[in-house]
Each structure stands twice: as C-alpha cells, then as structure tokens.
Length: 115
Length: 107
Image 1 (cartoon, one colour):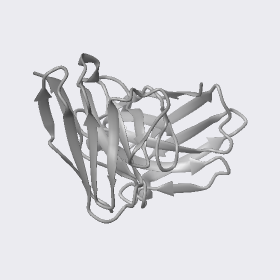
Image 2 (cartoon, chains in turn green, cyan):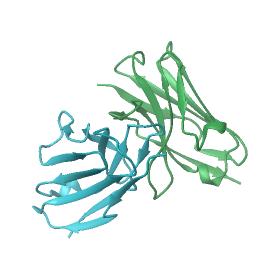
Image 3 (cartoon, chains in turn green, blue):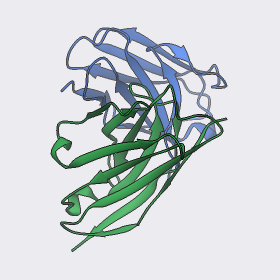
C-alpha cells in the first residue's frame, strides 16, 4: 500500500519561500504523476501542480509564477517550493498521487505564514 | 478554468436517509469527474472516479452518476460514519478544479 508523508517547516515568514517534501513509501515514485494540493483553514481544495517522475511539470496558472515542483527518484520523494508567500498562502498542504484524479493522499501539513 | 458548483453547501439528514449531492460543471467535462470524502482533520479519501466507478473497498451505498455538465453523488442509506464534507473534482482540463464541498451532518 503506497503511503505519502509531507515534511517541512510549519511556520514561514511573509515574503520568504515555503519548502515541503513528500516521501513515498510502499511503492516506486516512477511511472506515476504526483501532485500538491492545498486547503486554507475552513475552506476548499486548490490544486497547485503536478510532476511526472521524468520531471515534467504542470502548474496552476494562479500560482505558476511562484511554484516549483521537483522530483528525486533516488530518494523516492518530490518537493514543493512556493516563493514570496503571504498570509493567503496559509493552508494545509497535501501531497497526492495522480495528475488527474488523486487516489492516495498524505496526511497533510499545516503551514502558517507569519508577518 | 472550469468552475465546479456543488449543492447544497450543507445538509442535515437522519441515519438511513437517502442523501443526494449535485455537482455542475461550467462546461462539458464528459465523465472526467471524481468524488472525495473528507472527515474533519483528515485528508480527502478517493471514493468514485470517471463519474460512476467505485474505488475498491468503498461501500456500495455510495454511488455516482452523470456526464457532460451535471453530476450526482448519492448515499443510499446514511450511516453515522458518513459524516464528512464531500467534494467533486474535474480532470477534463487543466487546471484541475474542485467543487466548494458539501458538509453532511446527522439530524
């Protein structure tokens, strides 16, 4: 059973870069798409972007100028960087398997942007 | 972007009731629709894909239907463990987009 686990700082200062990693266990990161999705407190879900194990990416245009997703197949993990964060980026960030529908999710990690 | 509109935004029903949630897409998405269940403090859980296919292990009281722009999600007999927020999501076009969610509570 594939499992995903997010890791990274829970507090980021405004204007700095948010960095998270997602470790994949119980299966290979190869031959799948992998996504980041976020959920502001009490609100709905927003897809951030995906990466294929080859490194090919696609980002939500609403965040594209600030997002970078990368993959490290040797570590079986992928990562998210979101630059120039503001309070509006405070959310639970999920990593998930899939580039269309998401059949496996990490537990999520809350990232708070402080001023 | 394709807008996904869910209704109602919340509902209250009794155990054993039939519950129906609708999801409307702003343009034709064929059957590229999935449904998720999210319990408080937890990640969403994948329930239904391609509008009507049940993911392995998901109880058969959950069903989905529809195509084009109009979709429905039904719980045939509401159980206490079904208390959650349900989201639809389209994967016909990028960016991938979700409905606003429907919170299901027990009356």
